[in-house]
Image (tube, rainbow, N blue to C red; front, side, top):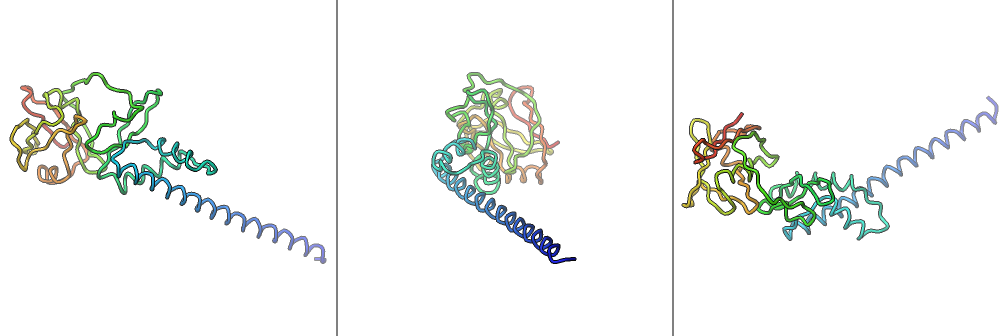
Length: 227
């Protein structure tokens, strides 16, 4: 191999080395940008949840774009960060509900447990409530069981009413009561009833993933049993 050939090989190696360095630098820059974005999203979530606010991931994206006009902010990345933070940090106090918006789209609205997603300014307001008497549902990621507004309304159980919880032969019963006790729950302001992990374990001895809920024929109780 003559000198020119050696030089050519060295030139190629030099180019490859430069490309490798550039690739590493690009990866590092991307990681730094993602970390910066995460910090900004988390800070905004903290502010909103501290105030008990209701929001969607796109609400955060829009505000961050306003606050950081020179920064490229991907809504997809913001949405993923919000979801992960909900699962890992503020999910104990907040729920997310898929909600129809006035722009014709549907979005997950993040809202406090005792507040309806319907108070989001873009939420389509429901003027009527359909009643149901039997349906299946899943345990939530927070290990809670949500009794829907539609099921409660069929028994005239509305926000603020007390519900007594009992269990017999593997079936949980919910009955309206006026006497508060250790076994009573209250229907939330959004019309739903949430049964926590402790109550489920005391009733069933385990946390099954699926449940059937039905209204008794005389409409005196809601009966819940694992599937």
